[in-house]
Image (cartoon, rainbow, N blue to C red; front, top):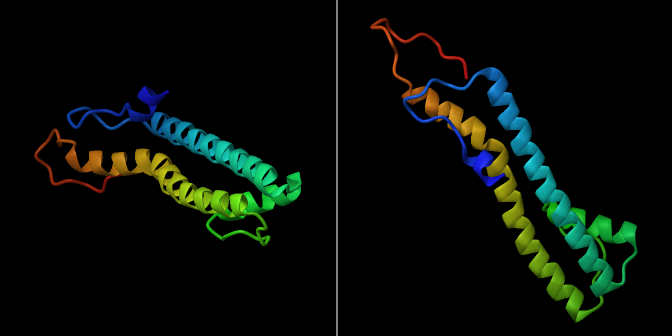
Length: 129
């Protein structure tokens, strides 16, 4: 799977077709959503174990932290507070990483478009990204 995330055409190769590009976007989005889903489950588990929250309350707190909003409930235990702080730091990294995964094909296509050699001497026309 990692190979598919990093496999793009080289600078001397032509741009990928629109279908290939959309396939990359869909695949990378699915990978990012999977990472977010696993992170949400980890957060829910942590809130359930360390704070004794039910599924709905654990989901609410984990999703709010994962989304960057912060916890909803007041934490009661020292272990819960340490978990929440650690989970918040982890969530910030996941947010940045997921954004990078989703945007990688778009950024690559834009940068690759600037490096593709024109085959004729005519002035460059507007390029479709």
